[in-house]
Length: 434
Image (cartoon, rainbow, N blue to C red; front, side):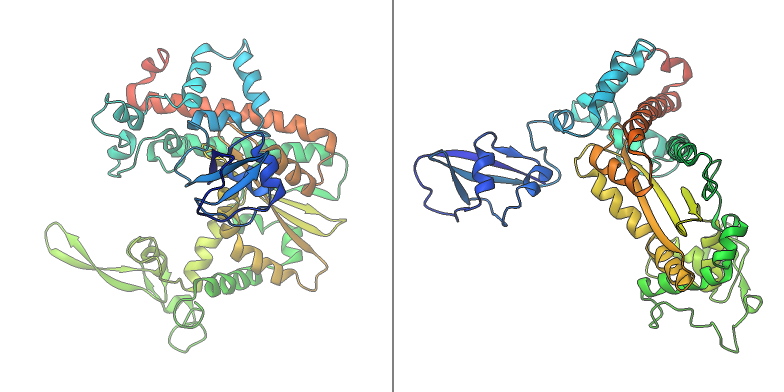
């Protein structure tokens, strides 16, 4: 969200409230348009459209409070390129690099200029019949084919290449951490070489010694259940500890995942020859149904899902007795609040694990911290990056260098994803022409 002001002149407006904030008056001397970030820095009171302020003998009226779907400047391109502190110098170095193919530079310029020919753009300018994604359509899903869509794992055809891009960013960061740790044997990046499932990760002797797997599962399940607030008992498994269903062996087998569950329910499923047949579905498979998101999971299903979960990074500091969980988010940076939105998603994603693990660490002398590393597809916010590097105890002299290498990886992967998109739509031969 941003704001735009209109110059009224020396005549005082008849309606609206006057702002007495000197920071607003000072800012209006140089500009009448402000992004949400710039506006927050002014520490202003809540103003509404029609309110006004006096600056240098002239009145300015708050003309528009822009919603998130509107650019603060005239275009999204101007918004993107004019943002400060987003590593734009790395973008310039990439475009000037003689080793980068000209076709890659053209694709990047098209994306920055908002003219990359996705179906959404072609439909907008009257050159396409539909804005929907061709790759998702082939898989039976309907989604708008925008640049943000094809750069994300939400596009079914792009999921694999986007995941590889995310993993490359995560590996780069962890290798840099490992390099800085150097000969310090007390600091260990457990996931530096590859991601591990939670269960595999907890086979590490040091983590198992700090907190047993069984205790972690139980504490995290309680935290998750309380957040869900299901079953009328803060989400706890209603069959747990009862005579009728205290063991997983007492449950029935789910016809979808072939796992046992104490809360299996029968559902009508169409059959080609017999009309309809009752399928037994576990609580985890039922929860995947978008029409039934409010359902909880029994502890057995929760443990299976939890054990398959993967963390981007885990660092153990033996001297400081601290476990650091690293979450890397690579997200669309079309809007300036991309960092805040991705950070909120990561915080919610790790809430149950963080609460459960904190409970397990009580009385052990160990502490826990979670560090979110949010990067855009073509941006890295310098201020947020430096904050994250400080939390990870990276030497300050390395911050800019690692950020530059991260930007290079982001831009290379950005182009790789676009080439994958064209290859799937038009064939590999056509990519050479684009």
